[in-house]
Length: 584
Image (cartoon, rainbow, N blue to C red; front, side):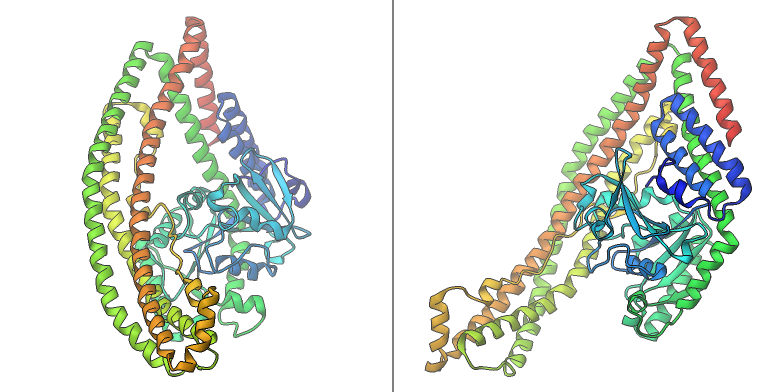
């Protein structure tokens, strides 16, 4: 997510509480860093430095709302600002980080990947920032901003609604991860059933290493008992203190849905608001300052790395650079061959996993069929008889509801087991990728100091579940005129049992088909996730080669102009290096 220094918001809303020293010193340093980045041809650094300068000048700091999908993050943010400004729903809706900031009037805008801002009507925001309307961000939205006349935001605090974890596509999860360097404080939204989960915990730990201000919220308090929430509070505090090695503050129990509708008990709502106001008053200025210094450090490191690359390429013989790149390509080629060989081994692992889930499927079906048929027989007596076609619809719908009640609770443990099995498979791929990165680094290739050296095996599935319960509504409400006529006369000849027998068979069919679909959904996710992981490794290896080749291409052009040009270029790089270092 990026903001534009030339955006109307910068001129319209001005500074909201920025520390004078940050405004006077930090923003100009960032703008000068942007100029150096442009001189070096580092356009992404140029854009980010300019945009951070605007944020610092206005005294804005970001409080990101993070957590798993279905935690009610968007509803919580809407309740805090007093307006329904970000989309909510029962499915994981957020696909693009959305910044909620102060404005005199309600309005929204989106930024496309080409850097252009577009005003949008607030009700249309969901067309750009939700997974349902913009899956995997196929529309190329870089970010969104909503301006709200909220007193809570009037002193520079901005909320950020981030894509939820655990149910979004890789691109959306990566978007949340990529936003971490921009986070200044965090609203961690968890639940009581279940409490904080694995991937959620990893993200909170990553954010907690960067920021000190973590505000913990257990949402949907209206849906759980006091005992469940008390256990969740203790569990959340204990596990975060263990992971972050520091004491956690209060855990606020709220129901954002209740607050939006003005019903139910307040619980810890007033205390949560007081904590946020205190964050503004006690830490707001310091958060802006830290954001400025953190940004200067991170962006300057990127520029210094680029300067190193170019200078080394200028100072070593072209032949040596070519040999290094050739060595790099050979190692990458070995990685490709090993990856293909490992794929055959992992195919056997996937067959083992398939056999495992076939066995689990049979075990579940054997147990659930008995329970479902018993429930069906018990409920059958309460189904009103009457008109034949109506009776058929009732008993068929009864079969659907019983089958759904058996299959849907089973889906979650099956997904969790599939996730665990996939991670074991992914660990071998990731280990192989990291081994080749280390091999390249051990070969003395300085270009690798600028590359990420760790692929993460703990990211879990790269694709979301596609499973939805199959109702077979055509069977429950048969369109055939002959069937309809037959159902009218069946009760008259005492053959209602034909309908109930068909309903029993329909129930068994629903269980079998949907159990198989759960199994296939998980196995397909394992295969597709492994395929995407292979692509990630290949992209990383390609990027290593690309960085080195670009530095060599720039060096060739300068060397073609002769020794004076090389000397001048090195002096220029030395000057820019000193300037970047002085800015930090």
